[in-house]
Image 1 (cartoon, rainbow, N blue to C red):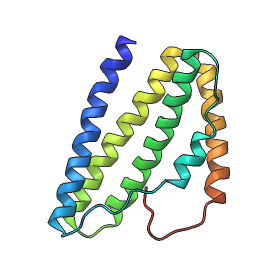
Image 2 (image 1 turned 90 degrees about the vertical axis):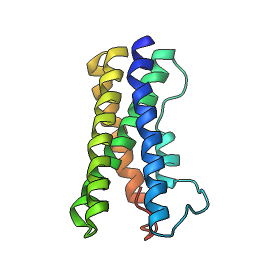
Image 3 (image 1 turned 135 degrees about the horizontal axis):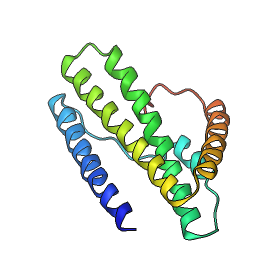
Image 4 (image 1 turned 120 degrees about the horizontal axis):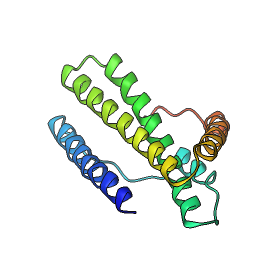
Length: 146
């Protein structure tokens, strides 16, 4: 578990830094956070996680869930960085994309340290298949990016 803590501690610090930077960008634009609401995508994705089993199984399930969320965040930030005109936000989203890609890789790599690679790859494919079903079931909303 020491390895897990050592790898995830910088991720937590980096995510906190992202939060602070988002706050800074909102303030610059005279905006503030709205009310917190459940993310339908994440709520449904959490149902894919297999409950029970060993601690290692549970850890791998959570690592794969987080890897998928980070991978999709990376993709969204890439699209935003390529499409936005504001140069400051373009750079900001590009930096977030790079960071989220690293987190995704870390989570997948950690999962493979706790369970055999074949198992992790199989569960990853199952997560992706279920995610496709989830995405197809969600309504398109204009107020959702993440």
